[in-house]
Length: 118
Image (cartoon, rainbow, N blue to C red):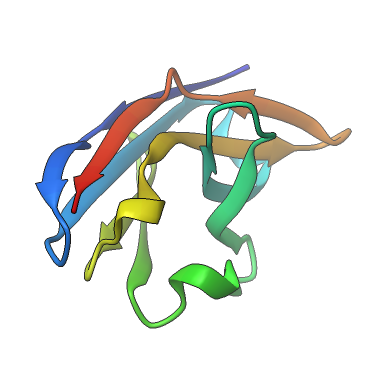
């Protein structure tokens, strides 16, 4: 199993910045994709930004140039931060850290609310 702990999020004015952090522990060697997702009310979860084990990152078109993921790996686990700049009201959502392991199994964090006031 993989455990994910998220931190960050909160309320910010439009144009401001927030940083989300995700720490993965457990069977991290089985992770081949780690990412941040978000979910708007009544919608399915969508990929915001992610990184595969080869270091390739990808971003949702709506966040390109504004959001950046940064990755780190230590003996204590894997870490993926999401730096969000130039936030817009339409970025308001619940953000989840998620990983994909062998067998296409997903693990999710508990989610953190990001609210951008206009």
